[in-house]
Amino acid sequence: MIPVYTRKPLLTVAAVALLLAGCAQTVERLPILYKPEIRQGTLFTESAVDQLEPGMTPRQVRFLLGPPTIEDPFTEGRWDYVYEVEPRSTDLEAVSRRLTVFFENGQVAGASGAFIDAGHPLFDGADQARAQ
Image (tube, rainbow, N blue to C red; front, side, top):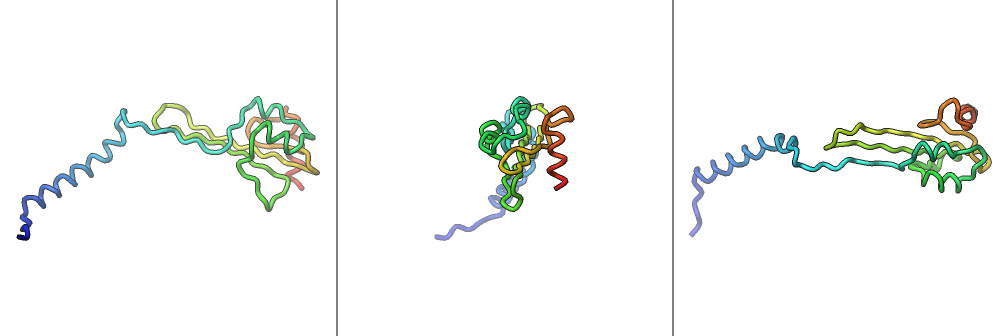
């Protein structure tokens, strides 16, 4: 025998679906819900950037900073490092760092970005490399 659907079970299912849909926004705000922070890119530190010197080889830079996040095959002699952290369930501050290392003739010629200020030995070289 084929069961006949009545309004009562259909209304019950609709009511449960509505209740669950209404709770979806509340569940996102619960403090017990774990949301991991999102880390993207290559982590580089200020101490590692301070060790960068003019004349270093790409191999030395890779050892010091790690592999570049972006090594564009169309722009030879430029490595880009990007590091971003998006905290989702903690009160930490978001982090966004970018560093560009320029090479000329297989050696570091300059750099620009995070931790490269006027006192860094690669600061002037970065302006020259960008001008070319």
